[in-house]
Amino acid sequence: MFRGIFNNTIDGKGRTSMPARFREIFTESFGDERFVITNSIPVNLGNDTYCRGLTVYPYNEWLAIEEKIDQGVGLTPTELNSIKRLIIAPATECVADRQGRVLLPANLRSYAAIERDIVFVGMRKKIEIWDLETWNKVFGQAEKDIPGGTLASAELGL
Image (cartoon, rainbow, N blue to C red; front, side, top):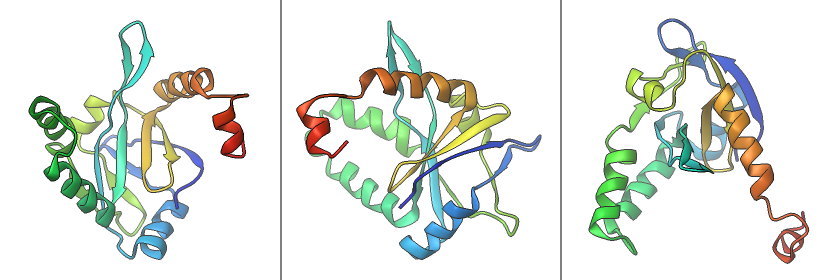
């Protein structure tokens, strides 16, 4: 499972290096070096302010997500089409090269406002990629949103 936070940069050609530990997990835990990068669902910071990032899924996990989306359970036709437009349409299948580099397509970099400094965030079965400045805002919001001192957090063992 993906865990950890790793800072990196994007080169002039739109490439970055996938953290070595994450590359290992693709093959060790998921049995496939392929992965899919797509837009993430925007994070609401309040006051109609949203932050956008990217999400990386192991290939087989992505296929399972597409299957669930095809079933459309619990979604209105409008919600389903919105998910397809935002998440499915821009999805790109990738494999890191021998140096561990991967190209982040221009349309995905634009969506997430990624220019140079980025952060890879392990989220168990997926990885998030954020512009560093955006990540700091999203992490700050997470600190505000965490259910500290609640029964739910106690039940999780936190």
